[in-house]
Image: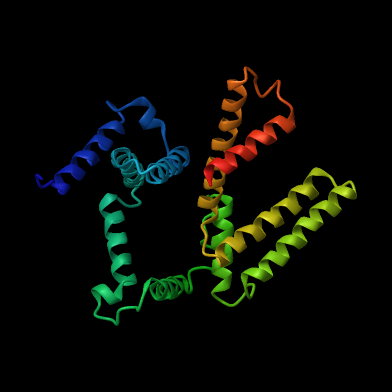
Length: 266
């Protein structure tokens, strides 16, 4: 395989971004963008990367990683225009951070026994870096994360100082309690705001359970979504084979086909 000149490739990408943002000859759309307008695209591209990995679509992954890299270049260019930092500064910052957080690789320190021990060491290092920078332990947990992911990270952060449930069964008890409160609130004629609050408490507790079980809640929910789609499509196919549609079918008919789809997946 021909060796790639990474430096030349990056320079070409930076030059493309510079030309796109050129005030005189650049692209009108690219020139008008700022950090806030580009941020949603950055998040979207990160999800596209995750989707390609989930689908094991490696050719597509290469393209999606390129799109995500372009987002980094875009933000770095806008920062450079404001005199904040440039792409080299971004690279220098992550290089310094990775070296500092891996003293067992780059600093001659004792190597952790396993990945779990490394995770503990990683959190200790991050805690030391946060010291003095934030008023609260939770301050730097990004608000823009998906809600389930942020819930897990908030709970994980609080857990580092012992504010946590003892075990997964204790969290299950909390989930049952929160579910009961939803039923009680509904029976009491609670309004939409109160019901939203109670459902939020339930979801927060479920995210906590996933953390105790070492399950990624976002991944688990994506898998559940995919499973629902597969089984519902099986219902549609089963009805179509009988010359019927979901609009014409009864709930009982669809439930029979749903159970058949579940059985076929086992």
